[in-house]
Length: 65
Image (tube, rainbow, N blue to C red; front, top):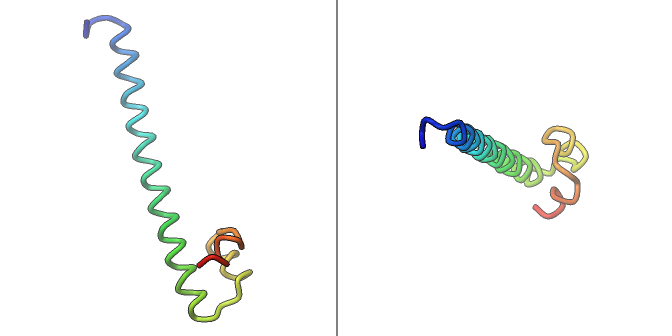
């Protein structure tokens, strides 16, 4: 079965799906980092529009922090 072209396609798709999952994990980590930075900025009294500008988070998300 491994010698067949079908197996090669499935294996290629599996590798691509794994890569996409890893990239998703990186994106989630970055979002968590942005949220932490925004939380610290808000606690220091920095204006929400400046926090939005610096972190690219939505104002609605910043308001919930």
